Image (cartoon, rainbow, N blue to C red; front, side):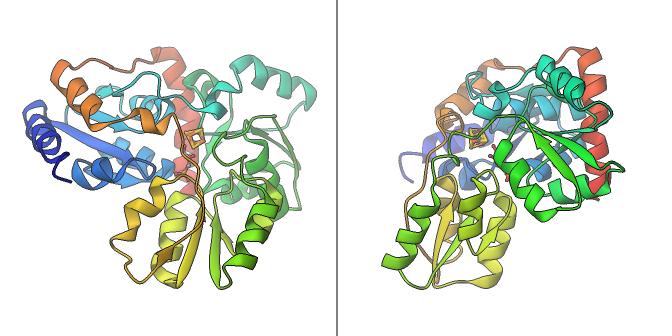
Length: 304
Ligand code: 13P
Ligand code: SF4
């Protein structure tokens, strides 16, 4: 921690001078999560928090689509992303043209789009979802066939939970979660009996089936905090266990994890630089933002 202390102090000072707040995703490194974040959470929680920000500046410690979502929901604020290259394999997997193709293939079916997408893709969709509210959103739609984009695994996992709907999907995947296999989990359980296995729903369905629980990043934190298993394997991004392990000394976090190269682009140095220079402001075309806001706001209203 000593090597981070000067950055943490400088950022926290500059944050006051700029009247800024830092919204940080659960996948940020511990020095960001514990050292400088004003709010931490999953994608839905961060989107809701963005609507409430009164400060002039939001520094989004997360990936680009999260910063865009904050800008869409609170357009008068300056929203900074400390590294413009902090992308997402899901957001890169689809464009608005892809949404149009799905609509042509399944006429009349509503499009539910994961928040891990660009503003243009959200603008072309009917409603957004996150991994914490997807079941609720899909169940709440008055339609037999529902298009889910762009995460095929999230869509397949939701299809298993909402069998009454015919869910069709786009062919996108998260490069972090698609790497896990059901065999990895089976082997791990055999070698480490008693381990509670907890998987994010961006994992393939056979991986989720092998797990004891599946939920969004905040769902995972809540589950481990409440259940206090002796040993827990978090089948998700590596920083999750690092961020919560201090508060849960009785839980032994075991097993392999995968790193998100996009999330890891956000560092203390880059946060300091963006607050110092005010570079990295995210802009969204106002017309696109207006349409995207409808899809995101519908999601927030339905998740309340
Ligand atoms: P949640 O935090 O909404 O579970 O999303 C995980 C994720 O991959 C964000 O990029
Ligand atoms: Fe995208 Fe996966 Fe990284 Fe989340 S973890 S930002 S879904 S690539």
